[in-house]
Amino acid sequence: MSKMTTAPSSVADPEPRDPAPVPTTQRQPVSKVGDRVFTGLATGSGIAILVVLALVALFLLWQGMPAITAPAEELPYGAFAGWVAPLVFGTVWAAFWALLMAVPVSIGIALFITHYAPRRLATGLGYVIDLLAAVPSVVFGLWGISVLAPAVQPTYDWLATNAGFIPLFAGPVSGTGRTIFTASIVLAVMILPIITALSRELFLQTPVLHEEAALALGATRWEMIRVAVIPYARPGLISASMLGLGRALGETMAVAMVLSVGGGFTFALFQSANPSTIAANIALSFPESYGLGVNQLIASGLVLFVITLAVNMFARWIVSRRKEFSGAN
Picture 1: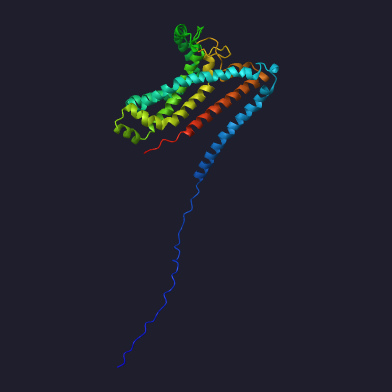
Picture 2: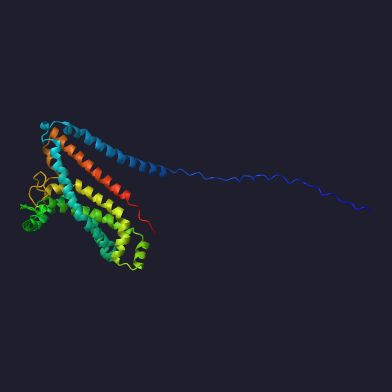
C-alpha cells in the first residue's frame, strides 16, 4: 500500500494594503451675521481711535506751526519758547505734587477696602469713591476757592515762618491761599478716585493661593500684602498712576479757578505769584485771543499733547520692563 504524501502548497502572502480611508466630515464654521457685525465693530473701533488721535495731532500741528515758526516780534505773547516754558514748568510742577499726594492715599484706601474693612463698610466706601469720580471739575474749583484755600492759608503762614529757609516754603505767603500747592491738593482729590478704583480692582485680582501661602508660612497681614499683593499689582499700579497723572496734566477749570497766576519760574509753593498751567492758560486766554495769538495757544496745546504722550510711553516702557508676576491662580 503506497503511502501518498501531499506536498505542501506554498501560497504567497498578499502584499499589505493601505487601509481604506475613513471618510471624515469636517464641519465648516458657520458664519453668523452677529459675529461679522461684532468683528467689524471691534475692528472699526480700534481703527477709529487711531484715526482720531492722528487727526488731533494733525490739527495741532497745522494750527500751531505758524506760531512756532513766526518771528518773536509778531507774536502777541512774545517768543514762543520763552512764553511756553513757564507754562510747561507749572503744568509738570502741579501734577507732580498732585501725584505725590494722591498715590499713597489711593493705595491705602484700596488696601483698606479689599483687605481690612468689613464687607458692608467696604461696599459703601467703594460706592463713595466711584461717586467722587463723577463730581464736575467746576465743583472742585469752587470747593478749592471757598473752603480749601482759606483753611490751609494759616498752615502756609506757619510753615513760611518756621521753615522759610527751605526754598519750597519761602515767603511772602499768599494772603488768599490760592497757590500752586492748593491747586495741587485739588488735583490730588480729583485723581484720587481714578487711582483708587483701579488699585482696588488690581488688589481683588490677586490669586488667593498667593495670599494663603504667605499666611501659611507665618506672615502677618501686612507682610502678606507686601510680599504677595503689591508685587502682583505693581505694573497695574504704575498704569493707574499714569492715568491719574494724565488727568492732572490736562485739568483746566479747577486749576484756572484756584490758582493765582503770576508767571515765571518759582519753586516756592505758598507765594501769590505762581506759574500757570498750559490747560488753564488756554482756557483763560482763548476768548480774548485772535490771529497769531490763537495759533500760539494751540501750539501750547501741541506741547501739552507731546508731554502727555511722552508720559504714557514712559509708563508703558516701565510696565513692559517688569516681568509678569507668576504663580498659581
